[in-house]
Image (cartoon, rainbow, N blue to C red; front, side, top):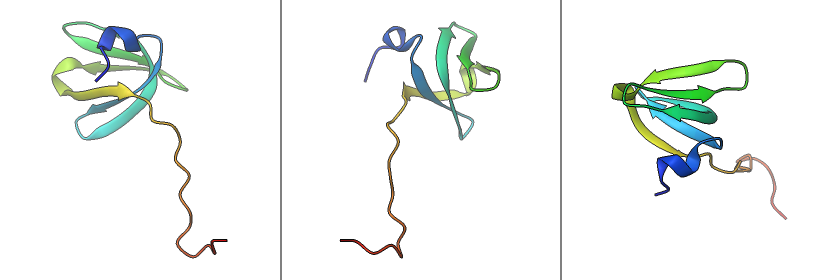
Length: 69
């Protein structure tokens, strides 16, 4: 697992209270995690965060009814 400091200023996914937040990791302190989201700043209390991980590459899923070649 990557170190939190190596993820600063990179896109991450944060799991907090069962929700996934995506944005650029700006700061992690003893009290809160700050992300810059696409439309707003996101501040989450550290006590609610269960995971911080690098953003996964977009996965393309085929529709179950789509014909495959």
